[in-house]
Length: 382
Image (cartoon, rainbow, N blue to C red):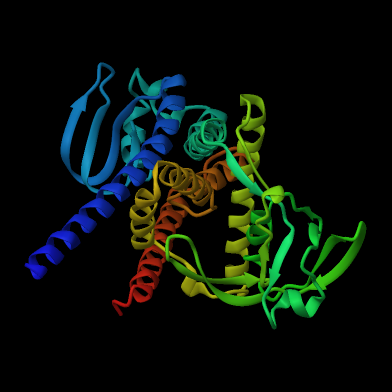
């Protein structure tokens, strides 16, 4: 009976994590592709296919304007395919485009649209992801609100970076470098990405401002979902006295401003993190892929709707940001091509574009495999 109960429990856990992952990835991908689709339709671009997932269709239908909407059996992305595209990455089919040039309806082809319209269609995908995150954060701040813990130190770990720098219990942290600290969580978000980096903290102590140079120590950290990562740590804990804790719900205007700040603040932190990895400051084994997203989805679902919805916002920002990277195959790669076209007065040559797409595809596949290998290694499967 114990074996049966264990098997049932394991099966239920796998099902829960799978469903949570599918919900998260489907929402984020759908919104991204919907951004491309809506702006394309606004500019009267003929859309052949709107797909969530890849591969053969599990379900498909066609709308009144001839667009085939489909759900693919492989739920790891999606695409919008325009009239004249060779593939899901919107690589132009040059032979077909030459044929379409003689078609009376050629004006509906994406690749014959003015440069600014094509650029706006491309940007619309990532923009939709950022707007989704802003809407989610705004809703959470209005409905659930947030608990804010004043950045007052309640405990200092022995031998920590904070102790060596001269922090004291009762200090109120005001700034780190040029960043204002308003909530204790601000400390962690800033410091975790800067292990080994010299910084200057300003604290209020006995009514006076005290400046303390400090260098976070690289430490293994476990997040609330049980995931392990390495990052900078000062070694301080907050003072949980009631006077230091407030719970606030915000009016729409304030919630919108804070939501925009959360969204682009997270995007900036992500860029900083990636930049440090690229230039060798950090452990590339921390780069994660779909298995980690699946685990985080299941963990977040178990922790409640607020945490789960917040994860959707975080992933939406990440997807929007990654798609803006200047890599052919991604939206940012298309924008680079358009920038060259704007300067040259004509598109790049066919062979140059094709070679770029091949390099981009190889790079994207390498990063996917590398990130997945890291995940499986962290889960003890290799």
